Image (tube, rainbow, N blue to C red):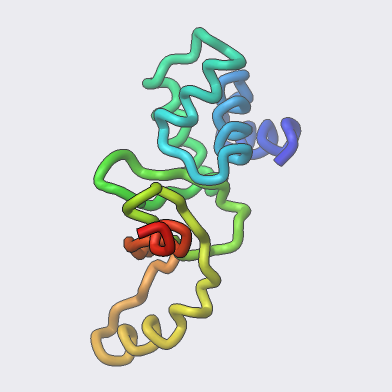
Length: 140
């Protein structure tokens, strides 16, 4: 999203574009999947005065605006990524921490079964599978 597009989205909500807001959004897009702490680290490389509280508040605002989304890929902080990304589930390696995206259609049969049998609508964007990646498995 360009600076002017973000500015338009913010302006429509009665908010203004600030440097920290743009930096946080840029960091999320550049990092792909990142915790608030990782976003903060990337933002501080450009603007040392931006504190972690500002990053958390900005991530919440950007999610409210539909520009970023989060999922829980560990027991720690949520992981954010740009909402413009196609919806996807995640594979998380417990050994090396690698995160891989998988096509949500792979979960179609499971999602269908859950809906039919339990009336449960699966939020695929928040699904994470934990295990061991191929590389770590080969090294074991």
